[in-house]
Structure formats: C-alpha cells, structure tokens
Image (spheres, rainbow, N blue to C red):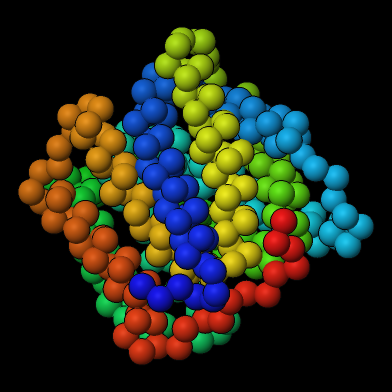
Length: 305
C-alpha cells in the first residue's frame, strides 16, 4: 500500500497501534459496565485522561497560540467524541464486543461519504458498492429474526459510528492547523465536561469500585484515550482522514481476536459472513485510490511537534 506523503508509513504504524488498543478494550469495557453506569464510567475515563494530558503538557511556542482555531477544533472534535463514546458504551450493554466493534467499523465507510457531502461531490461507484456491501453485512450481523428484531445495542452502536466518522473528519481538518497536543487536550477536556454535565440525569448512575472497573479505567483512560488520541492527532497531521479510516479498519479484527481469546466468543456462520461483508465494504471504499482514483494530497500541517 502506497502511503500518502513522504514518511507517512510512521503514521500508518501509529494508527494501526491505536486500532489495536481500541480493539482490545471492547472486552475490558464490556466487563466494567457490570459495575458502573455508562456515562459515569466515561466521565471517570475522560477525567483521568484529561489529568494525564495536563500533567504531561508542554508550554506551546507563541506561533501555536491560535486560541480561536484551537477552541473551535477542540470543541467540535470533543462533541463528536462524546456522542460516539456515549452511544458505543451504552450499546455495549446489549450487544457483544465483537459485534460492537464491527458495527463501529461502519464509521470507516461513512468517512468518505460524509467528506463527499461536505465537499458537494457525488460518491464514486466504489463508495456506493462499499456501502451496499457493508449494509448487507450489517443486516446479517445484527438482525436477529428479521426486520424489527435488531438488538437495541446494535442500533445505538450504529449511531456511535456516525459520531466517530465525524470525529475523524474534524481531527483531519484541525490537526494540521494547530498543535496536536493542545488539540488532544481540548477535545478530551470537552468530552469530560459533557459527561460530567449528563451522567447524573441522563441515566440511572451507579458505581462499584471493583478491580475490573479500576483496571478498565486505567487502561481506557491512559492508553485508549490520552495516548491513543494524542497519537491520532499526530498522525492526522501526516495523512488524510480517508487513509486514517482505512487503518482503523483493523480495529474490529483486533476486537474479535481479543474477545475470542478472553471470553471464547464465536461468531455464527451468518454473523461471520456479515462481518466479512462489512470489512469488504470498508476496504472497497478505502482502497479505491489504488484502483486509479485520485489520491488526496498530504494535508498541510503547521507543526511536527
């Protein structure tokens, strides 16, 4: 696979590592939700991540003190982040880790389609074919007994996919324009505030500080949030949103492998076929540049820090 821009193989490896971290945490979060309500868990997770980012923050050179641009990017990305994680975490109560991961992967198909809408151009045939394959796969994976029998967790997770797709586009737009560390801090802090404002009224909240909850908070707060979003913002200074989405196609694969190794979860033949169609749809959309379509140029960035 030809990278978009000189040296972007480092961004590819970094994004693949992020996909591995996120894929491995589906099982961890699923288990933790036995002892904590979804929004309260997210509030604690993002609070820990924000504290870690503040503790490791560096003074920014004057040229990166772009307060208005940074605030706008961080607020928009943080709002998308909050929506995506709220719906995903809530959905994990009612669906399995591997199904959640594969449905979240639909965000990867949504990225080029939303980008096409924002830039007012028609989707190319590869995008249409990819969406059709992914939609059929989604039905095989989630519809249990026909239409109207979709698991509530599956429907919530589809909403989270849209949130994450918008998040990738937001980070892709603002990361080349501001310092990536500052962008990460503002977006994670925004998500923390939104969780704090909603966890006590949007759902019944409870918390039992069991070892699995504490372990899940450490893993998700430090690795899957503070580290992962810092790496994503750094990488998206060097590659495009569509290319980022392609690397994140690895996330559901890592999630299923983790779920299989930890819990022994197996997909039925129909579900496996649906998962394969989703991945095929994802790759059809994301690999279209290799078939001769115009490859997006490397985004302009203001900071390599």
